Length: 128
Ligand code: HEM
Image (cartoon, rainbow, N blue to C red):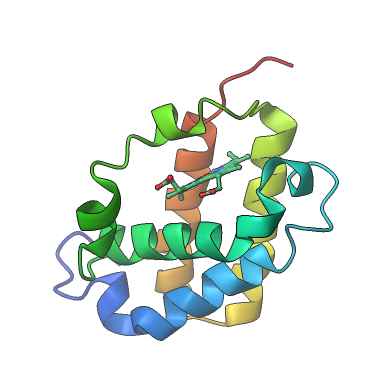
């Protein structure tokens, strides 16, 4: 997607595309030895919904995330979790696996992958 493109990621893949992508990420989480213990097992469906709603908002869809959760403040919201390089890399790896499986158009994959890589790096909060 170029800056001048009138279409957002949401316009192209819609709610269904983002739901599918986030589903594909979260289905890998419970059995992951780094990420599994970090996420609330009893509340995984709610965590999945929060990420989905955030991405819907961030990529051009309805702003329900903002209405429900307020400003994303992602660094603050991730502060309770120890996010070192290996956790960041694993998060990105699981999301990339889901992106590959979703088979979106190449420009959609590129836009999402760049955002995930940058945001995941921004959320590192530990040298450990
Ligand atoms: C770098 C590795 C990352 C780790 C280890 C991590 C871990 C977590 C954990 C454990 C939660 C709590 C689950 C919940 O109950 O909602 C969470 C929430 C969340 N994460 Fe991440 N995350 C990472 C990267 C990202 C990235 C790259 C994004 C954005 C693309 C993101 C977006 C979110 C959002 C939107 C929430 C819910 C915030 C809220 O409204 O409470 N995270 N993350």
